[in-house]
Amino acid sequence: MSIQEAQERVNQWIQTLGVKYFHELTNTAILMEEVGEMSRLMARMYGEQSFKKSDPLANASQEEKKQALADEMADVLWVLLCLANQTGIRLDQALEANLAKKTQRDFDRHINNPKLQ
Image 1 (cartoon, rainbow, N blue to C red):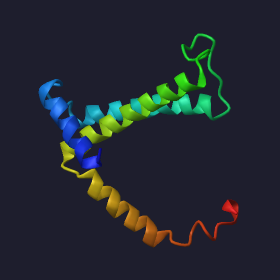
Image 2: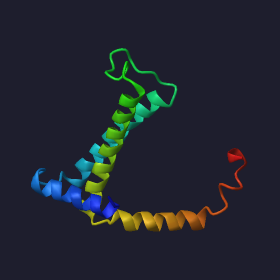
Image 3: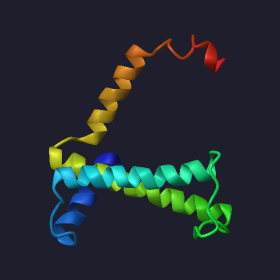
């Protein structure tokens, strides 16, 4: 699905099953919470952190851990789509503009970065 379709589907879900959007500040706090949950998994799966023995994913397979991470990423995207809808932002257009900005600004920045060679 496209980004615009995702925004429309989230909006439809909110209007029919979600009753209404949470306040924008509430959704911002929820976004930070969801990013934290995703970050926690990233630190344990790809960083130096380890799972606590009491963590339900401690003995999970890599596929189960990957699915949990995918779910957390989708939670982040969901709330971001809600915020975009609430603030009247078309994320597809915003992403296109952001890519153009980065392309113009950074066209040789990374190629010439000795840390990346």
